[in-house]
Length: 228
Image 1 (cartoon, rainbow, N blue to C red):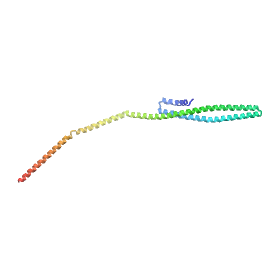
Image 2 (spheres, rainbow, N blue to C red):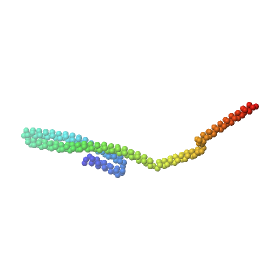
Image 3 (cartoon, rainbow, N blue to C red):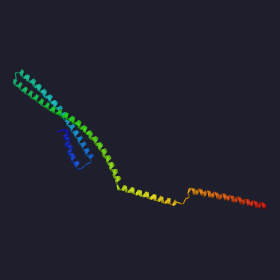
């Protein structure tokens, strides 16, 4: 089973219940990211274990090859001593060592394939994880904007706001009515500009006439005094 198949099974097993309960999308996104991060750690751990095992198997291959070489030398020694039975046994041991080296080398090939596959999967998973993180950040920003818009529109649609605005308008009308009453009281209580100038001219005429009368009386008194 591939890494993404395993990751999909893990994520789906946890997400299905949350989706059925209509959880917050941000929580689901965080869960997906967490599952991907956990899978990333798991795959890296497996890859590190495979690399360590490969090194150990490589040492075993070298050991088996060294044993095969040693048994080959022992077979030659046995033949020089005319001990074909020992030479035959040494060659059998050499063949067994060579066969074991081949088996271990096949195991190393399997581990190499697993490490190569893990490296490719890690690269893909890291890319997907980076994308998920970026999308999660964008999702959070969009969610925040949407929540603020809903909050604002809810407040604007609240009947209490409408009631407050209506009461404010009624208050404005009352103030307008009071000001209208004040202006009504002032109507007719003051003279127009033409009336004020006419009154000023009339006052001036009276003053002139008064001065003329004073002058006339003064002349009359002077004349009477002269006659006496």
